Length: 325
Image (cartoon, one colour):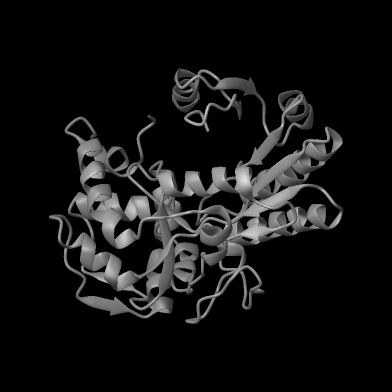
C-alpha cells in the first residue's frame, strides 16, 4: 500500500511494539486501538476511503480458556469493524477471510461458490467461518464489502504452523514421520498474498468474493523440496492421521508451557489432513493477480529462514519462535 503511495493508518494495540515501529518506519500512521474496543475503531476509521479488516487471532491448539478470546477477536471484532465502516459510509471495505472457511474441498479444485462440507477441525476455522458469514450478511445488506480469502501464507519468520515446522526442520529436529502425504493445500508467499489483498481493494467488485489462495501443492511434494536443504530427517514413515493426532495431544500443554505456539496439536493434525484445493481463476482474471508457485518459492524461503536463525537464538523456544522484526 505504501509503495502505491497510499496514506495508510494501521490500528495497533501497542504503538511502541517492534512490529508497530516497523510500520511507522515505512511512513504508516499508527492509531492505538483494538477491534474488541469499538470506540477505538470508530476514531481510527475517521474519514477513510478504504477499510481493510485483517485483524484476527490465528493459532491452532488453543486452550479451552482461550477459545472465548478467539471468538471475541475473530467474530465480534469483525462485526465491530464492518458495522462501524457502514456507519461511517466508507466507500470500500475489504474483509480478509480465509480458504479455511470453505474447506475441506475434496480432490476436485473448487471456486468461490463452494459450500463447505464436514465438521470444523479447529476453533480458528469455526470463528473465521462465522466472521465470513457476517461479511456476507453485510454484502447482502448493500454494504460495499469485498471478501478476499487467502490460502496458506508462506515466507520466512512465519508465525503459522508451517513456519514452526520449517524451523523444526532447519534445526535438525524434524522426526522421520509425518501424515497425510497426498493432501493438497494452496500456498502463496506473504508478498503475493499482500498483492492479492491490495488488488482486491483496487479492482474488486463490492459484493463479490475472491480466492487469493496461491497455487496447489501436496504435502509430500513440499517436504521433498525441504529435503533438498540440509536439516531434519527424511520422512520415512507416514502415520495415520488419528495416530498422529493422538501422539500430538500431550504436546499441546507442554509447548504452551514452554512459551511456544501449540503447532504440534490435534487441531493442526486434523486441519493438515483436509484437502485445501481451490482455484484462483477469478482473482487472476478480474484482478490481474499473478502468484508464484510454492514449488519455486520454498528454496528461497528456507534460505531466508536459516539466515534469520543465527547463532544468538538459544534454547528450544528461541530457535522455534519467530522473531519480532
